[in-house]
Length: 188
Image (cartoon, rainbow, N blue to C red; front, top):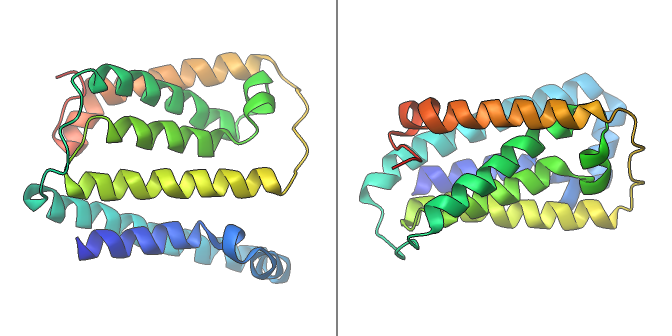
């Protein structure tokens, strides 16, 4: 669990700089945007690597904290589909979804992590998905408090692209990649 927790601290830590030290982050970006992006990317990859490695090591020995509900698998498929639609929305041109949600990446992480908590009751998974859920909620609150204006709806077809891209990616993940990468099929 130590490596998993270290990875979460590193990954979520660098992603929390704007929440905890906004002026410091802004100064770093203003001083040298490329250096900040490079450092941010490097620290993120190190944290992600530690998370993956730590979860792989911790999961087989992790005690079961709770028994997931039997309906959790169906709810998770729906929640993760919504998350997969929101993820491309974050980087796509502004459409109605992005203008309404305002922070689709964070909301996607909330749906993804909450869904996974419905089907994983072991300590390693609860630590992983619980940490992401708490972080995304705190980051969303912070983002909403910054009071950034809502984006203007520019391209309605961006929503169609996001839904189609998210659905295709979700289907590939559910049918094939999840089993290959994590050894578990979401379909049972």
